[in-house]
Length: 256
Image (cartoon, rainbow, N blue to C red):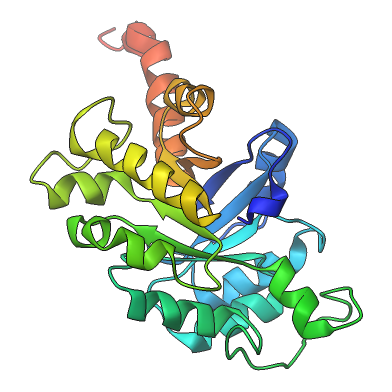
């Protein structure tokens, strides 16, 4: 997410790990601002992700994809299909960040190949310049090593945003692998990354599983956007809540 996109309500996106064309529509109808197609975890493959991107509104500023690695081939396919942001996981060095920028940006910023597969994907006098403005290059920091090298990552030319993976970050400190930390090293990392991203003019996002936690981060000005929930977890909660609400009623008369 680019700093130029800020100014209104902080965007909220959801992670989609299942190969469904309906989920992003239902999420948008519920009020989500966009989607992160998650190719790192779950069942979503490259071909389906590209088709889902083509089904989304072309002007959707927050049609993002999280890739499994910094591999220029899949990244190019996703961008040509309409992804407006690429999140690369487990970034731990400036070298990796530079490779991400090279894969996501056209010359002179990066080295992305020009081969538009959708008409009018980027509107502007210069197609490369318009594409570079439209696409957000996002490095995910989710390890202790990545955090220790955060300034060299954040200061990489062409980088637009940092995305925090709190569960993996916690695990790298020997803590339980969950998110929504109120204190400890993960909370300290959020504050530290907020300071660094502000100083270098890039945005900061985070994955969260709870709306109240996300709202508190927004209120404290610690993040600019959030990934709130992933379909696998949201479905699990819904299933559990539904069966729990039914309770013991289904056992009535079972012994007769």
